[in-house]
Image 1 (cartoon, rainbow, N blue to C red):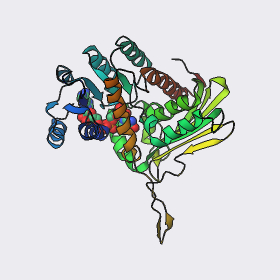
Image 2: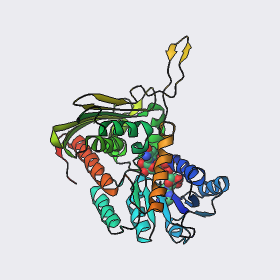
Image 3: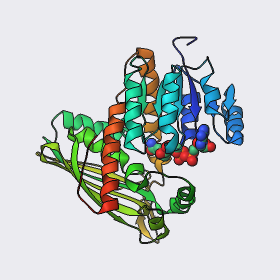
Image 4: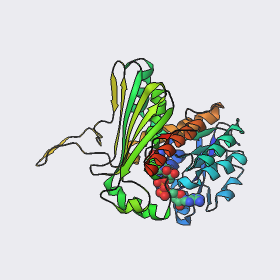
Amino acid sequence: MGDNRVVSVGLVGLGRLGRQHAENLAYRIPNCRLTAVCSIKAEEVEEAQAQLGVPYGYTDYEDMLRNKELDAIFIASPSSYHCDQIEKALAAGFHVFSEKPLGLYMEEALRVQEAVRSHPNQVFMLGFMRRYDRSYVYAKRKIEAGAIGEPVLIRCYGLDPAQAMPGFLQFAKSNYSGGLFLDMAIHDLDLARWYLGVEAERVWAIGGSHRYTELAQLQDAETGAALVQFAGNKMGVFVAGRNCAHGYHIETEIIGTLGTLRIGTVPEKNQVAIMDDRGVVRECAQGFLERFEQAYLDEAIEFVEAILEGRQPGVRVEDGVLSTALGYACKESYDTGRLVEVCA
Ligand code: NAI
């Protein structure tokens, strides 16, 4: 580390989300410098370097890890690379941020957990950015202040816009995303653990593909639901989908012994009501970048601050392992039609 008040970051992955992280790391975080970018697509690297003024560009990840000016690696590559890239970055001595999910398989997630634990002086953070969204943070504080008594049931909708489906189908033909529950519901599974304060015990998950039936050939579902029994007789109901006609619908309800909190019940784009020949229209958010723009920035600020303050951040590797275990149990239940015990 050169100047120890500035964290020098190398980012891998410059796709839909990586590009947003790149802008945040380059421009919007005090004490952070985006020093290097890496993607297997040379044109993405050149464009990011030119537009964001990034000194170093790589098409090979291991080449980037040899850059001695870097303090930290930020991983926004496809999910199947996360575990290998995390392990290599930790072994090379870097602090590491990785996008969710931690891993697509339990064995690799557990391996990464060991790697993180054996490098206790390096910061590791997983990108469960909803924990940094202002509304979700506010709800957490309310629960901690006793506003709804003891939280006992959580109901979550995580629905991607139908307009993103053609792009997803293209992606899914040559890439394994982990399936509906591990890829999409993982944020909700993490939030459930966070809000309920207990771990999952067993799950029954179902799903189907009714509009895009080709998803069934890819062993995936268009829409799915999971019913989860948590410890202490607490409950979770999770609906995940990729075919939401009205847009990007992320909704969470937490029912407590004394009250209820709802976040994003009507997933409005903003506060504008359009009154015309269709009636009164509130437009819907259309994607994760729009809905969680502030959370992506605040999670990256937390990562940089944790490095500068020499502490571990709020989202740890254990959160990744436990949510992956639950996501995997959902997938297994969906695949087999059976009630599945969750084991991490
Ligand atoms: P994408 O497909 O748009 O971008 C992937 C990027 O990684 C591209 O720049 C590609 O060239 C690069 N890449 C692929 N293989 C590589 C390799 N071996 N070495 C270096 N670079 C490589 O993917 P997207 O949608 O940006 O997702 C990336 C990750 O972020 C995924 O793991 C996904 O689960 C996660 N994600 C998280 C979200 C959240 O809400 N936290 C939202 C969207 C994605």
